[in-house]
Image (cartoon, rainbow, N blue to C red; front, side, top):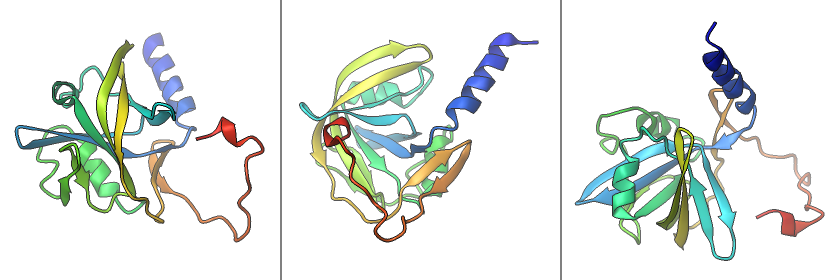
Length: 177
């Protein structure tokens, strides 16, 4: 029995119960767009505005983004599952079937995304088989009323609209972004 494989599979199963959004991290080097699907993206700080994402150490796209020093995070909409599949697959022309335009920092902004965040690379930390990349936010996109694309237990999902009047305020709003 391969204990390491068993632990990795159990780890993946347990953490798969934490629902995440799906984003595509993009950059452009010498007029060549690059990008990858990412579910390890989060807000980190309000002051200064920072975000983080975690590319694998084996990523072929991350070294390009690191060289460029700028990137955009495109938050995918619930109907963009095919975009996630394209950007989550190795090789191929990921931008060939996707409509996009350059953002303020030059990184590709995917049309139809719920919103985007434009950033510069601030800090990079090695962490096991991934890097933790901290980005300094330089621009923010408009927001959409659409539903986000989610990833839960190894599958894509979307949110349901809450019943009318069922939203509530957090008791301590300073605890949440």
